[in-house]
Structure formats: C-alpha cells, structure tokens
Image (cartoon, rainbow, N blue to C red; front, side, top):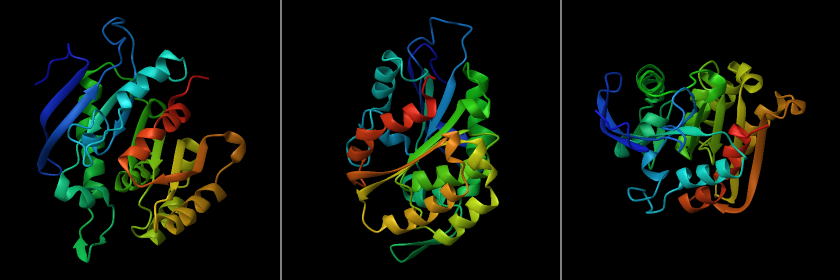
Length: 261
C-alpha cells in the first residue's frame, strides 16, 4: 500500500467504512526514524491535510510547511520528534465532516457528520498508524491540530476523547458554529481541561469570529487551573484567517504541545 522507506509517505485512497469514502493521507516521518529501529514517536494528526505541507495542493496555494518548521524546532532542541499525519479534507464535504452538529453555511443547511469523522480517525486511521509505524499510542503522546472548521473539529474530538488525544492545537476555531452548544461541550466534557494540553488562538483580524471565540475560551479558562500551565489561549495581533497567517505561527502550538522540558 505504501513505501515505508520514504520519509513522506502518501496513501492515495485510504478507505473509511464509517464515512463510506476514501481520501489521501500523508505521513511525515522524523529524520531519525530509520536510524533508531527501537524508538517510538509521538503522533500529531492534522486536519485539512492538503494545506499543511508544501502547499502544492493547498486551498490558497500556500502550505504551512509544518514538516520544515518541525525539523527546525527539533534541531534547536525545542520539541520532540513527531510523526505528522495529514488527513485530507473531502472538499465539498469538509464543513459537514468537521461539524459535530447541524447548521447553515451560505444559507445552505449542513448536516453535521463530525461524530462519524471522529470515529473514522479513532477507529480506522489511528489503529492503522499505530499498527504500521513505531508510535507511542498513549493520549499524552497523541495530538490533534487544525484551523478554522479544522479547529472546531479538533476542539470537539479532543474534549470528547481526552483518553485518546492529549495534545490539542485549536487554531482560529470556528466557534461561531453553534456557539451555545460549544459551551455546553466544555461544561459536559470538562475533564479534558485538566487532562489535556491545549493551545487555542485567534487573530485580531479574523472578522466576526471574535465574539464566539471569547465566549468559548472564557468558559474553558474559568474551569481551568492556571497554575498547571497546560492551557495557552492567545489573541494574535494583526493575524487574519489565512493559511499564510497560520504558517507564520504554527511553531507556537508545536512548542507548547510537544516542547522538551
């Protein structure tokens, strides 16, 4: 199915019985993977996989270059080495798969399939990755990251499954999608606040996203113990809702989530 001798492994059609579809998965292995046959690695799962590497298939033609940022931080001794798994979105089904509840987008009704997408990652993709690569499958060694609707699905999946995902990068989250229910999620699954390590951010030039962001993050912080230092929530001055802006700051969540003590 794939060539494990390559550092970046592409699986063109990874099937999901749960979602009844298939998508491309890109797996980036750390440079030491082939040098230390007994070593296991933490894993970071990232949504919108088209956008996170070189940008060749990115929505706006700009990728996060997360593999290059990762390598620089590793070389500087700032983070541990990671296996990074890029999960392609399904384009016209993207919003539906990233939403745990029904809603509307551009006046069109959207059926939320987020729970099925969640099951796909947990029940189909993660077991495949853990079986075929030298991973540390523990929650404290497993991260999720995404932006916009990818940030929203990271929030939902992470809060609902702190026993699976212990590191959450919630970037420019679309908390406007049923804000009231997002607050209910925080209250219902509040154990995740103490059990997980989170980075949550929003740019100051992201338009209408600010009010919903404030409401949900305030709820999270009110339930958190600041002395633990596990949650970082930030407004990023001057940042907009673009891949370029996310590329510029992806090093911050990487350091917070996977930094070396």
